[in-house]
Length: 223
Image (cartoon, rainbow, N blue to C red; front, side, top):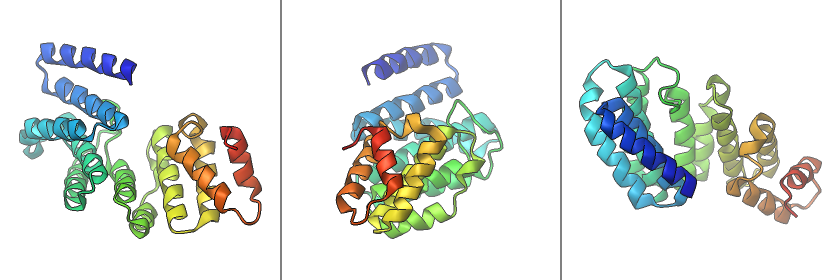
C-alpha cells in the first residue's frame, strides 16, 4: 500500500498541474482504489463522491472519456457504500453506473475497464459485501465475464461467485468457480485473502475429500 500511495500521490500532483479533468478524474479513481484496498472506507467514499460531483456536468455530454470515468467513480462509490452496509446508497450508485454504461462504447478508459460487464461484476461484488447470498448468485447469472478484456476482472468475478456459492452452501460449485478463477489468472487468486479464506472454510466443511479443492489448497499453500 505504501508504494501504491506514493505512486498515486505523484499521479495526483501531475494531473492537477495539467488542469485536464480526465487526468484528475483518473488519478482520483486510482486514489479511491488505494483507499478501498487499505480498508479506509470513509476516505474512499469521500474521494469518490468528490469526483462524481466534479464530473457531474459530463453526465449530460457526449465526451465518452469523461462519461466512462464518471461511471467508474459511481462503481467505486457503490463498493465503498456496500462495505459500509448502506444498501440503498450502494444500489443507487450501481444504477447510475449502469445507465452511464449504456452510453459508453470505449472499451477501456484509463484502465477502468468501464462498461456493462464491469458494472455486472461490481453488482455481484456489492451484493456479496452487503451479505445477500441469494442476490450474489442472481447478479452473477447475468454476467458473462469472458466479454471483458481483463483477466484480473474475470478472475475477480469467479472468486466473488465462488464465495457466493459457499454462502449458499453450494460447496461443489464454489470449488469449481475457484478453479475457473485460478485457471484464468492464478496470480490474482492464490495470494488473495478472500480466496485463501474460502479454501480454508471449504476444507473445514469437507466431509468427502474433493481432489480439486485439495489441489487448489496445495497451490495456495493452505493447510
